[in-house]
Length: 462
Image (spheres, one colour):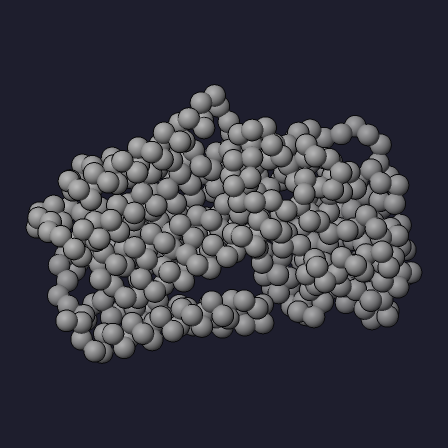
């Protein structure tokens, strides 16, 4: 029987998790929500040490110390541009840990012998945790490699991949049944290895532009694996926390897929039928119109309405502080300025919001795509800083494009567009941006931070 104080402590931790999710729903309360969630996790971890007797206490404390050190150093040193990679790694580690714990529990089931009823369902939960946790672990590592560009961001397809993937799923289902009917540790290990293969094959065909959706999906997988592991361990807080993560990850995945204008199934398997997740990846030699900071400064200084479209390039250059200063200068001159935020700007949802919040940009100036798209037609100048795929008109006009059908920011409807780019290299989706060749578009080449500084000085000089 679990002591009442333990149940109450777990209830407090669960409530903290719920409040954390609520807080994370808005940039204004995200920091507080994150802190509340951390408190809940700390409470849950501390209670474990007092709930009952622990075996192997010293190795446990050493593992906690090592893990905490790695986590703190990693979180402190990671750049804002690498935050999606960090999320993918943390997510994968969670899934892998759940699978390992389930394997240890399976070994105990085998040693103790199995009965009927609850133990059989516990075996079902164990098999589920092993395979889903393994899928999340290997899939997250592949997403990390794609985001870090350790491998190609294009879909990786080979002959027989659909057969191998389908066969892997069937084999995993068969082994899961075997684990329940005739539990054995070696079967669980094989099931875990098979899950690693399935997770890798699941993510390989996904193109770079769709990787954020897959990260969210794998996050949901990890949550479900942790929830099932909570049932196996008879741990309420794991069950509640995992369910919350699984539900939130599922909703986020569906919302992101909708924002990209495609289904989750098409995101995962569209490339297998030659669909729109494959990009060209070649820079064009078509002529474009370019200008220097002084010319662009004149456009901005004499505009009445300006919209800024930030993207991953802004994060890479760490130019958000200079950009905010530029916007402040324009605002002092009576120019109406807002930021247009696409749902998947950057490499993950909320990436741009966090980046701009770091630069103390007022939340009122951050406008979501649905709220600001109707304003582009009344805008004098749109300044695109490091964004690419989210403003590409090819999403509307080119059926073979990897982003075809994805709702975009209607930047091409503005009077003038200034596109800040380091080079003519395609975006993460690997295709040309048709907006670059629009007669109303002026390119401002150079590193975003350096060029933004020159642009700021040029505006101040007018």
